[in-house]
Image (cartoon, rainbow, N blue to C red):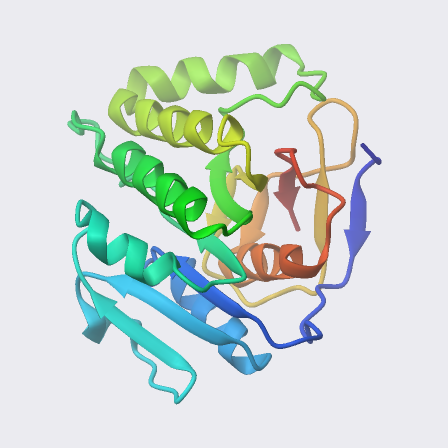
Length: 228
């Protein structure tokens, strides 16, 4: 795997694709949907509350369903060229169940059934990649998260395991501190202890990285850490 990339986001992804998005009403997911539509893709999004999308478009197909609705997930995935999952657990110290892990497993199963290969998903740096050379601080991060928000950590780890063992063409983008600021025009991606990857990242740039992966195979089968 190559070293870190430090580049301007590719806002104009070439070639129209049919992309299914999960988590499209979240803080990052809404940016993903808008950027896909802005670059001419057809987007299918499965949401519980369609009003939260805050966007309408002729190329936007909305399926209203819960994440435990397997037939609806299969419908959303069928015919897609790629799937982007912007799902992530709430920062809740009392979170106990694992609905997002179960939903990710259902998404992967639906992709296998429909013959859809490309999966791009989110995680945090609390999930390791074998290419990492973590420092002591990097090793302590998941320990601290596990003490503060253990349920969220279990969800992130569970979702990541489902993705990385899926036998799909997956990419797992690992964030540290997504924030609501305007894009600063730079994306960095690489591996802990090896590459120049920082901590904060504009949510709109997280979305840009996910969208970029539709036409970028450098991180297929890898979980790069990303930042501005």
